Image 1 (cartoon, rainbow, N blue to C red):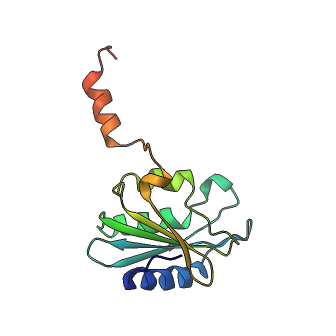
Image 2: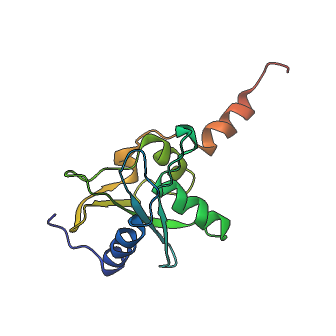
Amino acid sequence: MKQKIPDIVQKAYRAALATRKLAHAPYSKFKVGAALITKKGEIITGCNVENASYGGTVCAERTAILKAVSEGEKNFAQVVVVTDAKEPATPCAFCLQVMAEFLKPNAKIWVGDLKQIRHSYTFAELLPHPFGPDQLKDARLTKTEKD
């Protein structure tokens, strides 16, 4: 990665790396740590939590978002995701959809492995056409049929 990585992102990377160790991943063995950087510069972490009923599994990114929202924080500037994959993994589609509620299109998503941050993307690069509140609003405004 050639671009300079901001100090707050390096700090979030270290937090995500540490939180990754707490992941509950007995089935996939794929531990993930995530760290949200709020617009205030706070860092909120999360790890993946798997469940024997696979649909009950929650990814690290969603864990961090749910934790942040439950603590009253909804304004995120950046996200850092850490895995041990040879090519660092980007957030899954489900996580990106949840992020669509809280991230601006130009928000940075940084991905790294156990050694360092390897890539950065804008949210819009990873999910160029999110489904969000605007679509719900438009649907309610144009609804013509009776229930």
